[in-house]
Every structure is written in C-alpha cells, then in structure tokens.
Amino acid sequence: MNVFTFVVVLWRLRQLLGGVSVQQVLEFCAFSRRLQPRIAWQELTHVGELDAPPKTLPQTVAVFLATAINVSPAQVSALWSALREVVWLPRFNPTTLSVPLVDDFSPFARLAQSFSLGEQPLYNPTKHYATLYTLGRGAFPALVVALHCRSCKATYHLNYYREHTEQGSEERVYYEGLPDVVQAEKHMLFEKQLCELFRAQTVHAHSSATANARTYDQALRRTTARSIGPYDPSPLRGEWVSDLFDLFALLLHHSEQRTLLRLPEDGHNQAERLFRAMQERNSFIARKGQPQWAHACNLCLKVLGPPGDQKMIHCAVTDGISIGRPCCAVHNCPLPLTNNRAHFCAAHAQEEELCAVQGCNSPRQSGRLTCGILEHRALEDKYKAPGKSFIQLTHRHRQAYERGGEDGEEVVEMELEEEEEGEQSEVVQLDPMPRRESKKKVLRARFGRNRTHNEQLVVRPCGVIVGRGTFYGAEALGSVIDFIMSIFPTLSSMPDLLFFDNNCNLRRHLENRAEEVRRHFEHTLLVVDAFHWDRKHKLSRDQYCSMHCNPAVYPELCDETKPNKWLFNSSACEQANAWLRKFAAQTREMTAVRFEFFLDEVIKAHNEHIVLQLRRANHFPHHIPASNLA
View (cartoon, rainbow, N blue to C red):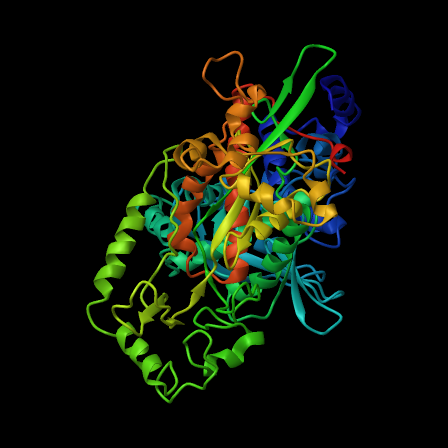
C-alpha cells in the first residue's frame, strides 16, 4: 500500500478514527503483528502461512485489542480495515524468534487469558517446558504449546503435526520450509543459526558432536533471560547434537526439494525415528547424485583452440581414501550388519558358527573362535598373546600423524587397512623357516570385524566432489569402472578427461571388457595425474603407460598462459581426500545407513563452500543443462 492510498482510506474512516492517537495506532500495529499466527489460524485448517490478511478479525482478538489500546470495538474494526495490509507480513513464519518470546510483553501477560486467546473449540492448547538453545542469547527455558484439532484428530506442534496413517500408526509430518526454531526433541528447541553453526563446525573443523556440545556449554550457554518457574535448561549432550545434525540435514533436504519430511511417531529415540528418512535420502542421492553433479566452472571446463575450431574439455579426477565402517566379513558383501558388533550380515549369519580360519568350514569349539584343529587353535592363541598391542598402537600413531596434514598438502595414501584391536587378519606359517623353493601353506584368519576397503571419490579440478561410492573388498579395476559408469551413466555426461593414479591398468582392463563398456569410455582420455606419474609410473618403465597415460604426451594439457603449469589441477582428489580423511574417527563406528548419510551431507556442505569461493573468485560456477547430459 502506498502513502496516497493509505491517506484516502484514513480520510474515509475519519469519523471513527478521529479520536485515536498516534500512540494507539502504533500499539495496534505492534499487537496485531504479534497476533498474526492466531489471526491466521482463524482462516486456515492448519498452522501455516497466509499471504493476504483476512477482512475481519476474530472476535476474541478484536475485543482484546480494544481493551489493550483503550479504544472501541468499532474503532478496532476501522483500524484493521485501514492498516491490515501494512501490519500483515506475507509468508509469515510462526516459529520466528521475536523479542516477546524472551522479554515481558505486558498487555499479553495481563489480558490474554481474560479473553481466552488460544482456547477456541478448534484446538486445545497443551503446554510443556523446553530449553531453547540459541546462538546469541544462550540457553533458556521456554513454554511450548501444541494444538489439537477435534475434527481431524491431528495434533499440531511447533515444526510438525501428528496424524494417524491408514495403517493405524502415528506419523510426524513436518511443515514445508526450513523453520527458524527446530524442535529436535520434545524438550529441546534449537535456533536455526545454531544448527547452521554446528553443521559448519562439523564440515570445516571436523568437530564431533560431543565437541560441539561441549563448546556450546562452555562458551555460549550462558543467558540473561528470566527463568520460567523451576525449569532448569539441561546441558547439551553429544548424542543430541548428532541427532540434531541429521534432523536439520533432512529438513534442509526436504525444503530444497519442496517435499514434506515424514517420521514415525513410535521409536525408542530420535535416531530410530530418523532411520527410515535417512534411508530414503541415501536412495535419493544414489539415484540423483549430489546437487553439484552437473557442476562446471572456469577451472574444470576449458575451451581450447582458435575461434571456429574450438573444443571443450570437462575434466574429473578419481581416487580412493581408506576410511571405512564395519561391514559383513564375506568378501564384497554390501548388505548391512544387523548391529555394529556383528561380524556378518543377516544373509551370512550362519558363518558366525564356523571356524575363523579362512577356508575352514568346521564348526567352532565352545568358547573359542576356531575349530579343534591344532594349527587353527595355535593361530587363535597367537592372536590373543600378550604384547601384540604395541604394534597396533604404533600403527595407529603413524596413521594419526599422516591424517594430520592440512588441505592441499601431499598426503601419502595408506595401503594397509586401518586396524584396531580385534579387527585384523592374523597370518601364521606352519614352517617358521621355509626354504625359498618350498610352497608352505599359509593360514589366514579374521577374528575381528571386517571393514569396508575404501571410499572412492570423483572430484572436479576446482575441488567440487561430484560422486562418492563405497568399495567393500578392494579398489579393483572392475569396481572402479562400474563406479565411474554409475556416477556418469550416459555417454554425454562422461568427462572428456579423467585422471586416475592407475589409469594405465584401467585402460588395459577396458580392452577386455564388453563392447558396451568400452563404448562408454571411448571419448574419455585416461591419464595418470602428474603427482603419481612422477613418483610411481615414471620409474616403472612401462612402455604402454608412457605411450597412453603420460600427461606430457598431450600438449593441450599444458597451460599456454603459464609456463610449466598444467591446465587442470590433477591433485584435486588428493586434496579432497585430505579433507575427508579427518572424518575417519567419527565414522568408524557408524552404521551403514548413517555412514552414507553423514558423508553425503558433509560433501554437500563442502561443495556449497567451494562453489561460494568459486563465485567470489569470478570462476563462473554453473550447472550444465540436464538436456546436454542425457
């Protein structure tokens, strides 16, 4: 509404509003805006948004306003007719924090109950205390109200409404959009800015949920807000922050997709309620890929050649990183464990009763992990012998040191599987000093849990991670080919140039694959990245590798504007691995579903940061149209 229209409306209502002071008008605007959610409920069947103000006020609200600012009901009606478009906030979020939520707002404290605001037949308000954790105001008690609809039997909470499904169970249906206050549990509310801080600390500082909770309690929890009764805010705990990370990620995902998050009401804890939604999100990422899957910018897509004879080169880099989670001990089995202490999935549960020595199908003896064969028992005795933990601790110390490199530093890949007590294969030779020409039998056994072999990444030279996959048994060439084809399912989506530290053998392997597979890679140049070529392939004297995979063979890969510089950053995957490797301690005991969910989420947030940096540096980050990649 412009000023001229406003003056015309006031002139038309001059007889009713002639005795109303400017202070009363300002109070009317403030109180009406504060009551917008209540006014909207009169017009809606659920707590939501109302873009346009209703023509009339609810009776209880009108009488309350008349009493609060000391005017007549007729004058309130006239004020609403004149000012409703000024007062009303389109797409108002009823969970938005405002000063009255913390400070005393005396007219409401004195008069609201007298006019039965919030006690209409449409809903019954139920109240309970909760802790509101904020970024700038600390943690303080709050009063949370839930509303029940007698018609549809649904109960409306701060972020969701609870309804009965056709199967008879109850379900939480979250409102559309990202709320300003997230109700993580019944008695825990978190300001959106604090959720974003926890997410950023996890992604960029590799801070664990426990570390985030302790940091908040020590530095940000103090508040000056007045207390509400005897309720005392609880200190944060790591598992609460962990569940909050998952819930906020799901709310963010559904807000971006314009869908509604649905969680079962039953469940012993929040982690159980989130499980199904996390599975669905994992399936979504597996089908659709990361949001930045179609990314391109000036650092990863180059235009070469003179005008009229130009060609584009879109580059990618792939490599593996040895972080993992517990998995089934059967080689290459992708099925999840029934729990994280199990050694086998449900389909291979019968293997638990067999001897731990590889290739032995005899049943275990009572109280042991091996059968009655003396050599097998000796292997177990060696495994349990005292003093062997020194080697394990030394190995862990070396890995921890190598994980400490900052992003961009040269980090040596670990070829050995990360070990922990009770989780490695023991090897014993029956003849302690075998002659070189003899072929003595070597026994191998796995007494602890198996772990996934590595995570495989596909990274653009600019640092954007476009794909991730889990390898269970080994970084085999066939697995790498299948992984690349899953990330780039169409010929048009395949990169023009792919760097991989084992591309020479990958190229050989492709020559023996089916025609369909070879055709998928026919327009992709397979080159060994410069780092691994200098340190490994150059010394091997492999003629095939030197002819086909040496980056120096292709002069177009050299930057003409910068002498002795490559056109693309072929170490981008090593740099991404250095960042991702620091999550190893947090992820090593995660279940399969949460492991996938967590890595997908931190990669998504990491990509958002990279794209923001690219935009600030004028590298023109954008998405290639889907029609060009089909």
